Length: 398
Image (cartoon, rainbow, N blue to C red):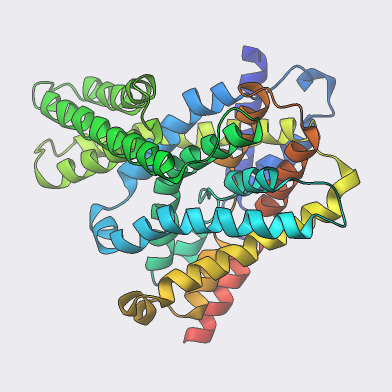
């Protein structure tokens, strides 16, 4: 991808964000995605490709850090139980139930192995709240739905990578499944990632007090976001959870201990420019890349996959929330429906798909195109309808 192409994509992103200032019925990420699909037919963008490394190593660290840093620690503490449950047990149950359902439903459409169905499910379980959290906050006076959706997404990205790695190994015949090995690996990569993120954040927070120039303090946040990710990944633990832990701890330290009153102001100013720039690039690139994977021969089953993922998410959410009296009294059926529909598949799902194709060298184009199609349907239909749905529920509650 050339510098000329990057500049043009950024300028397109600027135009979309400027024109689409409400971002309700047609959120900017959706508009960018559709424009990217259109750009894929232009010869000038024929050489543009997005890879797993671009998403994982350049885009995700910044996006995850921004989400974690901006997520209020008080909100995380308040909803820690349900966020942890949905991001671990909820994600595991969703993958197993969705995989089993897809295996049963695939019969009339194509030959899909049980492990292949589980692999599709593991790719579709992580959620991407980029295009819905701001909408939920605009449409509802109750912030808990947006807090749960955003918190779940931050944590389940790390969980989904572990699950995907297990099922991908089984699908390609490299590994056999062992519940004890899975739990050990999950605990190791999760705890290790969180520990590294906390250590990095503590060091950066201490360094801030020795650096009084605001521009150098902001530079430290870049080191924190990317450094914690790379160190964690090189040590074999979760870089995603490392970034999340680092961002949350930095925000906590800023609220309670760091007396540099201007630091959060300048930090916000910097990352609030970085975030829309990265989002513009990533959704335009996903749109450009999408046309390489769409297979219209199986679009009916793609619709089945999409609907099944929604139904399974609703059932798992309802089962977990209704199992605990505290959550049962706090979240009604309308809340559960909103959290379900807000679970849009996006950046992480695309990254896992590209990882399956490149790193694992899978030649199963049908599986990849099926999952890509389901992600595309999720981005389009759920993004378009989340504001009308949330507005309708808000009016009914009055």
